[in-house]
Length: 70
Image (cartoon, rainbow, N blue to C red; front, side, top):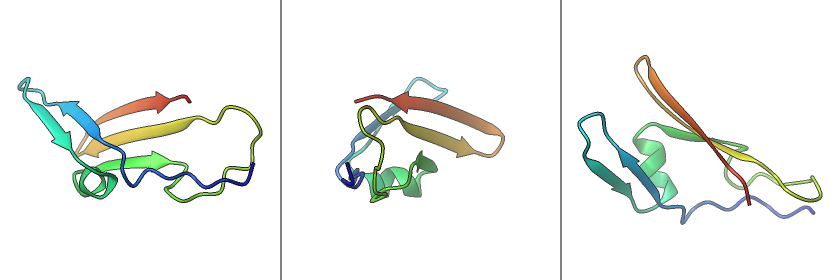
């Protein structure tokens, strides 16, 4: 309890509408491409047990949400 969420080294692999694979080698690159996360990177996690991390992608009107569980 009290550990911070650390996703600096998170690798995001995405597939575009055209079927191309896109690989983001770290969180800063993914964030710059339109991805966001909740809770935010470096947030203190104060819940005992499992915590859910939600990754979102938004570009224009199109979006995607994915939840990551430990």
